[in-house]
Amino acid sequence: MAWHIRSYHMPLDSTCQHLHDARHARRGIRGWVAAIGATLTLWRQKSRERRELGELDDQQLADIGITRVDAQREAQKWFWS
Image (cartoon, rainbow, N blue to C red; front, side, top):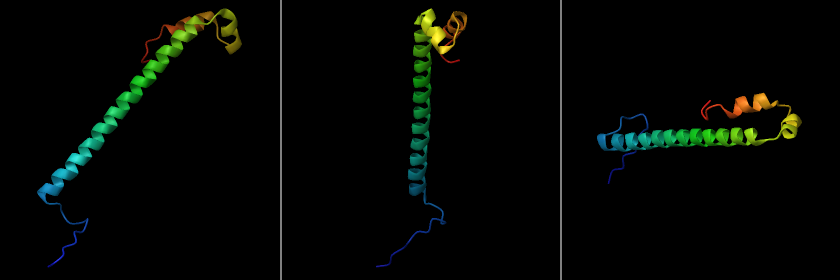
């Protein structure tokens, strides 16, 4: 019985190439899904923080060094900006 050891430098046959392409595509899809998930999480966080900023009273805003006008301006921004 002869054993054949494949070198990584040898071209892949069509079956192996298909499996390689499928794995590569799944990695790409997972990357896109992860990036979309991270973006949605960031947008949700910004939205929540801006809403909370808009709810602070004048003393709390003074404690963090922000004026009411600055807080309102920030709270009115779109979640993606």
